[in-house]
Length: 431
Image (cartoon, rainbow, N blue to C red; front, side, top):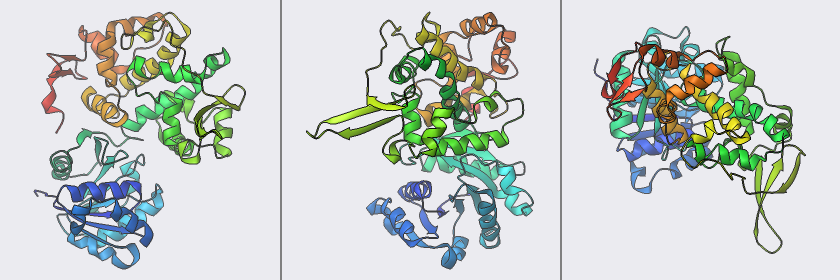
């Protein structure tokens, strides 16, 4: 059956649901927005461009759920609670029309848990359609099929995401946190732990953020600034989800809970920007001047923010990873550790390096995705460093080494190295 998406019903009018609805209306689709709360629905409607609101119908879940029967795509964007999602999907399955497609915007709950014991029609028509916040700005659109999802359903979502919404579609597998958050959250959670010895030796958290920003091709938020943006409350939930769903042998298990100071910050409500401060906060002096403060993780007291000390750090992108300094060791352990982690996850979370690179560039705004960065650094140098530390090479570095080649991409990025040790054309991997 050929599927076509011309209308979208969004259930859940919070931040993500409102963003998906607004993007769909901007693409010229008829849109239905439903929520349990009328004020939330109205707030979501205000997120839709004024010129597109004529395309939007609103309502309440309890009174108007039957209206989804007139829509091609039914998108669930409610609370991250498995039992609540399953209950909603059971209700939706009884009323959605034949030929429609259905999805969840969950950021980390595996589809197999959502689909368990659901009817065959649901299992063949369902996928994860995971957008990144804010939907209007972020390019990443992770598309995850279930074990029984019809290929025509995936093709319809991929076509709609790329052609109508203008998103970058990446094809992920049904594993915890999919691609972007699996690797991006590993960077953050492992970073909180691996930075501790450097803090103890006197390195400031501003310097840590400085090293883990532009010198390695990451946004200026670095480590602590990024977590402030996301929120310690969200990161704690991510950690719990990872602890419950990571494969037993995954190195990420070492980092699923917070270090003591960060846990105390969380418990006291010092969550980040949304709470007025986390690792950093901004206020105004009595004279009206802006004051930026840092929560010193060594003294556990607020102090005036310092400029990062990056004196002597190589200016060439990524070279800090090999620099003989405390900052270089920090970059190798945290950023280099994230590159190694990414290299261990093919084909577990995606079939190829290309989908992983696209997910991290589009979802976390890295200059280069992990495998692009390995090419930039020189994968051979990274392999030599890992072997010098008597550590095991991650999966894709083993493939590259055994294939006797020097890079994951060749011919100006038009071909990528597959798990079979052969190069494949880029266009065959991405819609």
